[in-house]
Length: 167
Image 1 (tube, rainbow, N blue to C red):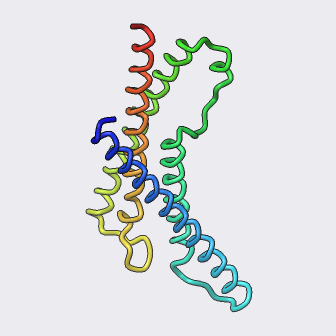
Image 2 (cartoon, rainbow, N blue to C red; image 1 turned 90 degrees about the vertical axis):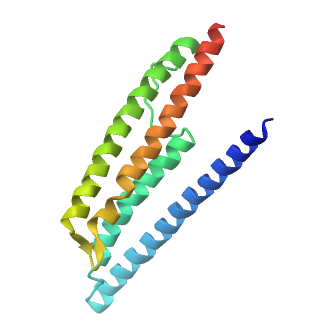
Image 3 (cartoon, rainbow, N blue to C red; image 1 turned 180 degrees about the vertical axis):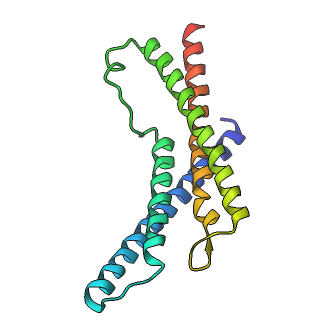
């Protein structure tokens, strides 16, 4: 095994651990904040003014981080009714098409998400308390960019597998 390959695998495992840790931390924080809001509203007839906007932002972050993890583990939603009956080479070719299409769509979403972040950065709007809107939106270009990158890698690996089967 190439020493650089071992380093790459360690880096990928470390990145996966960071992703998982952030996901768990956000989920625990969201549950705690939602529980606190429920408690404050039902028992004390009050609430945290910034709680609901933060919960909405947390749902966005959890959704995109969850999608990143699903893509990392190749465990995302697929419609594979047809692929179950296809021969392996045709199935691999279909995977090429879907990986390339998905990478393109996610790349476009990342690009336009970055434009949104820049627009909101220039506008200087606040999401809640003192947190700028653009900070809350950073997950959009980042998350879709990572997902696009992962589908590009999957496309290259599938292409290598398919062309390796031909040789």
